[in-house]
Length: 93
Image (cartoon, rainbow, N blue to C red; front, side, top):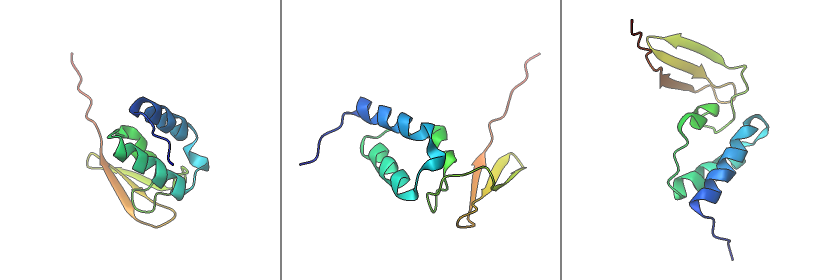
């Protein structure tokens, strides 16, 4: 029988998991992502540390471009492109 995990315990597991994401496999990422979805926990900026198509963690050797207010990353594993909007900084004088 499976052990029930509370939402706060799940959040702790997710935090621990993402501290060392570079040494994880896509299968492990899939499990954590599924846990977050089942407990309705948002990954926020953590979802940008792995490819949304093949779930392979980004190593830092990927091709990264910034163009028209978007960050564009080409995955080394599958070659798919991930795009995210960049936040605008407001300057108040």
